[in-house]
Image (cartoon, rainbow, N blue to C red; front, side, top):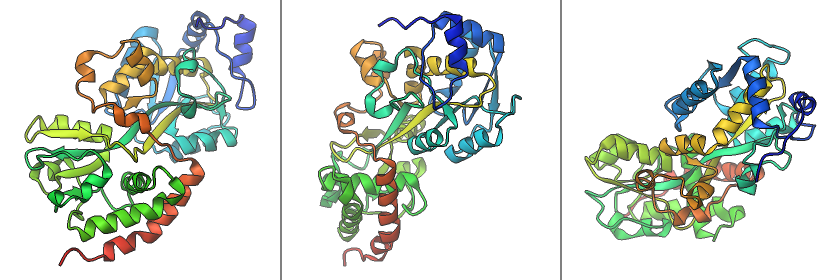
Length: 368
């Protein structure tokens, strides 16, 4: 569908819109002209070695000729939100125009009136579960929990959470850290619990704890934080990791040893990140153009090259836009069809249950 076309007056009105206004999508040629007049864009938490962001930035600068100010590339979601609050009325290059934060922080930013509404031209191809109805934020990419498997040691690769309980995986399965301190590991417990309860997140916390107690009693759980090195050495030959981290580990090891990355058939928990524009952006049109770039086919493919699953993956795949060599590097696709995204309330309840109950797992003796 062709983008809606607005007059310059409508574009000016859009520039002034905040989260309380109506999201509008201007003619892209008019938006490019307005962004070039602003001349620059300020990003925060845009680490170049993460999710293809370096390529995203470089192609944006090459295409539009805008200067990009890169603030605090490692800023957390909370720090990004605070940067908007702290820079209300600041029109310098130290005020972020656009943020990329975890889903719950996008919801917090909207509730606090910190972001404006804007729907990019590809809005219809962004899955409804990953976009705000009003256009205050939209998902850019997500990671899904996966099993990174050292196939030099593990000859039969597990396909689902229940498989990890099999005797053949004794002293093999590890998390990436302590669930009380590591979000990745916390979500791993949620994933196991969701698989055990048929996707019932209300019960997934307790079920996940019970799963790891069973895993420990079976002698399969290794209480070591899994990293690329421990995966390669065989200390943790099955590591439960976000898929993009597991895929990067696989590439880093370069076949020594060979690593297979599997997205389980059930209990597929996703951690989405969302893009939003500051309600106080000094360069609102440049920020909107950046959003267009991030959600474009080329922008989404840049993220996929960094192994983050772009939010428009299914649309790109259906239209044959994903190069065959890139597609061949990815895990099989069937697991992603069952992806589950906990709501903010569900995530908080699950965190409370698992952090309070993890001592039970730690205290559980292994096989005698």
